[in-house]
View (cartoon, helix red, strand yellow):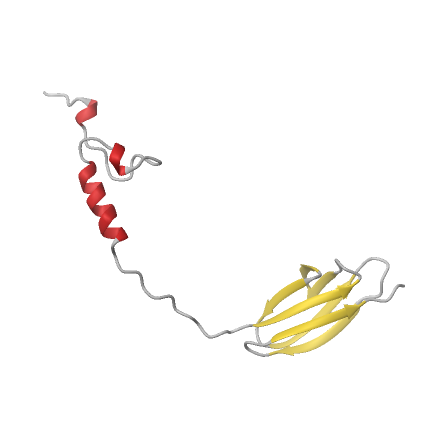
Length: 121
């Protein structure tokens, strides 16, 4: 039985993670051919889908108030919230201030701005 020398063995494609094809010995040619055919394949044109959501910019006084949409926290102001079309309930609150609420209807592709001015308790 003949035992192959390690340097002469052909490594499976992708077995040398982090190494380029040039450093692979004894069989790197197939990997190079495969890589070049993948690189030269034509890329499909990016598909632009029509908008399905609306965008709401929420600002507040005081700054960094928490924003809730339909009861779920969306972060702190200033905030950009992407929502599906329909009626949505906004609540903006901060400790020491009365909560501010507003219901709005979002349409596809709309961009609205809400300015919430919170009053001290």
